Length: 416
Image 1 (cartoon, one colour):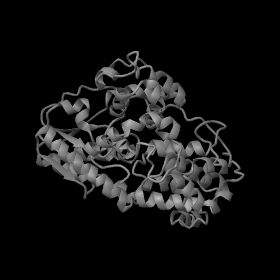
Image 2 (spheres, one colour):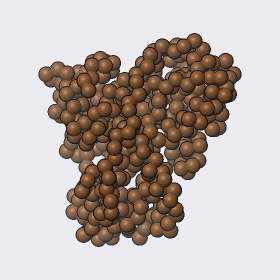
Image 3 (cartoon, helix red, strand yellow):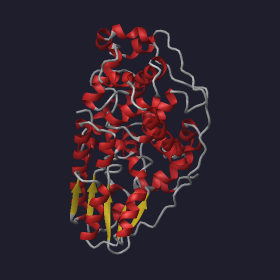
Image 4 (spheres, helix red, strand yellow):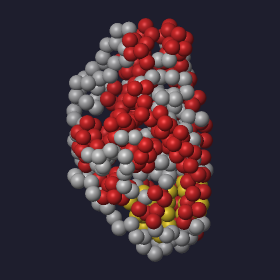
């Protein structure tokens, strides 16, 4: 398995990677069988079985900042994308609209069945479909071929990745495809070149995929016909008092599966529920590999919740989550349901329907954010490297860069 689906095992995989973490900057671009040069923890971070802060704390506990700066930077790319999209949620809405209007394309269908006619692309499709994972470099090559060589809609490629990737999330997946297509940064597209594949593909893979390299010989950019900078339209949500009112139950969803590490994890709840967003699974046709991984992660979250809060904990991974939440809240005579707010994406899109259903049952919905998320969001007003410049000042807090304070100390003093 690329990434374990329990918190304990994911933390164990992080610990096992620490001895070679200092080599990440040198080796990270190598596309090897098994992908031993990278952490392979992206699914766990995406669903927050472990958090970015925990990963960074472990890295800085083992190395000076300069030795692991590149790895830490890559960890925060995902949070940057989420923060960027939260400030501009219309980009997500536009993507969904464009995807619906694109319709079906026989060329897309052939590629998704590993029948593209290109050995390199078909290899990556088979790996993605069978494992739910691709090395980041392979994702870039694939997306560049899709957009600039096959000349297919980037939205369809993004949907294919989102369907299969265990770490696929609306922000990093959608915005990365936009970047490859030249829509994210003015005047910049990404082209996959044969020399780059020959440099970074594992020699054994390179030999078996040689027939597909010709398509990367002289890439030509498919330049967008129009470019408009996405404006910031959504203000940040205020931080709320995390003390729950009486008769408040806890809802844990697949967007954040380690709620016990957050501020609301310090509170006491009479009951908890862990739900799957099965409507999204069905709508996007998640494959068995992905559904099994998320289901196991949800089961792990339910087990940890029961141990942490010593409260009755319900696990629902079969029925639509809105119906399950309303039934659970009514059966437990709750006045409120509280949760960590999901990032921009399908679950967040369904919150108005959830709010309406709970209102009809006489139950309120209270959504919170992790303070570190709320304080990072304003930093994503521009490009990643301006975001990173401001962020990294808070990551090295002693001359040797050898330690971090606890999560709340790290983020609550964050200057905007």
